Each structure stands twice: as structure tokens, then as C-alpha cells.
Length: 186
Image 1 (cartoon, rainbow, N blue to C red):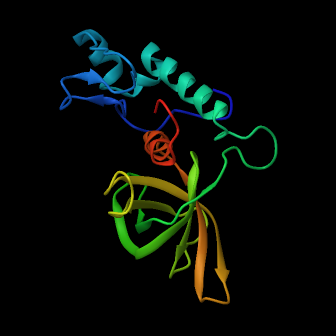
Image 2 (cartoon, rainbow, N blue to C red):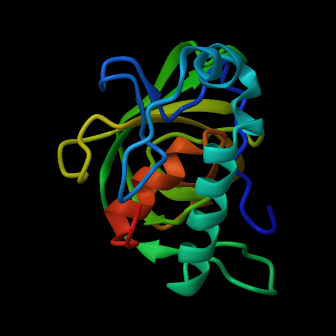
Image 3 (cartoon, one colour):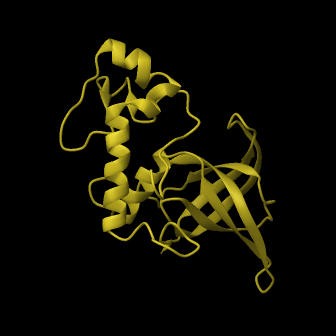
């Protein structure tokens, strides 16, 4: 998939919603209602990554993100960072994404990208820590939650606070962040 990977560790498609009239939320500008056999094989299983609608949606998302400059060619970064301060609650979690310990209920994002976020926190969060986070009411999709892996954490000596980089482990966050940042057709 080039610079952007759609795949997650989910056991079902993140765009499949029984509560939304059993339709696929990956489709934009139309409606796709999968047959029961398709739902069993793809939507409600980890095999969703092989679904033609999912694959086509991921390709479209990548093309749109590249067109509008959210994916960067070359250099160290794959995704353009966009400065944005949004309140955030961060908790450590286990490998099953179950929250363990509240780390900071007053963290703030410093910038967002389609691949992760940079936060400011009152606590140091060790590298490689898996975290769950929930955006506060000032985010365009209040209470949106996700999972990520801390890639780095540095002390900000002048303020006594810490900055950390968190990479998303869940592709559905890419779409929500894209919407928040104004990426069309997401």
C-alpha cells in the first residue's frame, strides 16, 4: 500500500457497522450493502483486509491524502504534521488494548498527522509503551478513542513537562484524523 498501511490487528473490519443498517462505511458517494456470505467471510472476520471494497477504499484514501499533501515523499517522515492543540486522556494498556493505568487526564496534542500524534504530558511515558487515548470535547469527534505505541519521549526541562510521539496502531484513526484536519472525501 505504499506509504500508508490500512491493516490493523482488529478481528473485524473497522468500517463494518451492524448498527448502521448493515452497510459498509468505507464507501463514499454511494452505498454498499454486503451479502450475508460476504459479511461472514470478510466484514466480521480478520479477513476484511482482503475485501475488494476495503482495498479500494484504502487506495482511494492514500491517493487523496497524497494529493492534498498529507503524505510526504522522501525524508524521515511519512505524514505531514499539522499543529493542533486538543485535550487528551492517555492510559497505558495491555496487548489486548485493555486500559491498565491512567497516565495523564490532562494531556494535550501539539500536532497531528495521519500516522500519529505528538503530545505534551505531565508524565514521562516510556518508549514502546502501548497506550489508549481519548480526545476531549474540543476535538471534532469528541470522545474518539484509539490505541498507539509511544515511539519517543523527551523531557522539556524548561516546563517540567514531557513531549511524546505516538504512532497509531488502528487505521480507523487515520480517517477520523483526516476528517478533523479537513482532508476531503474521508
